[in-house]
Image (cartoon, rainbow, N blue to C red; front, side, top):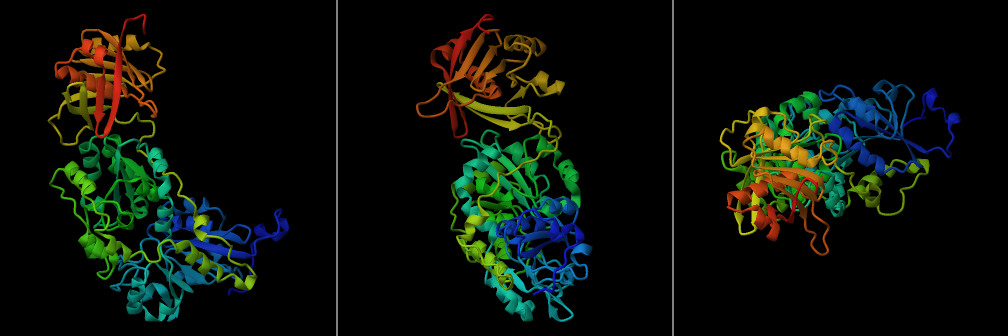
Length: 577
């Protein structure tokens, strides 16, 4: 137990309004952004009526960019490292999700918890060259022969065996606590549809989460163009793609640098999950993970998701670790084969038990992490008369927050030009849209071009066979816009303008106007009608020899992947508009 506690003058209890004051002081110690983000889970296990929370940064990490801003946002008082380690300044407990010998400078017992799926990566720079996983080395856990942490949390008993080999004197301090992130994701599975909606993934679209860890063996290092290939080779109405990159990627390259390197993929519709929060909710929402040996990919497999590995990292992992077995034994993505076929087969042929033996070997005590961590925390407070709260600790963690997403250009209208293919069978049109991005290496179109009113390239505007206005409250009437757009582009075959989420005005090449509206099936909400999808479908209908009269008499069923929308048409004239 630490000595007498001293608070700087600005924390004088005499200034307090809300009483009684919390009985114990806990210091959350962040060393990197990765470890700092795990502190929010810690906060939820410590009721504010019992605990006064402080946060500090253990300085010296190469991945501390943006760290202070994040730590200052945590729900507690921020202290500089100098303030946290000042003479006479003690705490009842310090908690960190990454260990460093300098943490001994804090006057408090130290609890260390893993910030990934246990301890797996070989990082000679932090283990003094020892060939053991970071977090389990004697160089990190000891100072002058003394064990620094009072508690060393591990996620699975197999890590005890490795700790016994690397630093046996630390073994009595180790406890199996499970994995807080995994347990929170399992508990949040009922919110899957909410997370998908927050990411703009609705209906039958499939969400592909791309995960990259950091350094030279990571996915983004080995297959830098993979995010761009995914968003341009997967039909946009059938797939959405979100990238989860390790926080060290952001810290080293900066957010602006990440955006610049992924600018084309962002312009083609790639979503990027920020490093602070959202990656767990994205996994809950996902249908498939394309990744590497990072913890996010490992947890995706543990959730039962199909996983394809584009990088394995076997050269930088402890050969005894489950992550090494995962990287060498998981299904591979063939970069030279068509990506869509591989993704489709991975989803359709997936057996969630295939990797269960490996993932179970890294995640011990499933469902018990909150209870085990909280029990360990409150073990340090017994001398202060503070008892562990009653009730299920899992409820304290609660559901994950909705996943935020980011793009490089927040004012951009999104993807504006699409390469469209498809076919017509009777009154059913099936179409597929692929984003078109400049300088991607693709020169031959799959089908015809369709553009929205957000496209500014004169070349693509003139080459498009379909044009669509997506704004419903524009100043120029829909019929006038359609006429002007047709006059400006002699190659244009179909033009559409949105009237509402469910209705569009349509102009054929001969000048005829039709109003299109979705049909609501019994017991279902009225489906939305995207004007570009409508225009592309009618263009394909005309390719198949269909005419306007048949549209009016029988309507059209438009299929995009597994989704289908029925549309009816009514002839219009200028007065009808």
